[in-house]
Length: 200
Image (cartoon, rainbow, N blue to C red; front, side):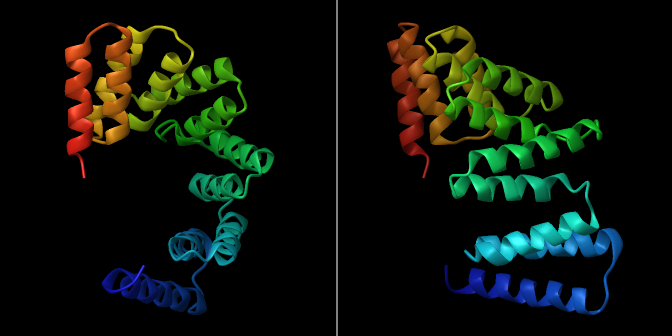
């Protein structure tokens, strides 16, 4: 990373550090620490990012996204057990806030799928989609689970198509192509593949 983007992030870090020094407390201090963690993470400073996410949780224990970020960092370090604990805490916090998205459950589903616990992964994704019916990533993950398990390609295709409509990304169109091919709809599969190739 270089140029204007790097400069903006470094300026934002200085701003948030100054806010902490001025004595921000309570929820404001927690959010400031979270923002610092996100900036450090984007700059590749993982140790500092983890430090600030933990400070955020110390001040605001119900900050679900700080738990999620720590879980993702554990996954990056190939520590699925630790990641699961952070995600489970975030999921419990989401349950206490009915209007919150099901992000933690989607991430737990990813862990379950990689651990070959396909049934658990499907159930977690269904729960995540009940909380947020427009979760494009959740729909795509569920579609791929169905296809990988060689079950219900029609539902997989419907989920992939809806995901692509919400978030126009190559993986969604590629998954739709897979589903169409399983269903014997070769022309639609080729159209979906062509669409994936046109996305920068």
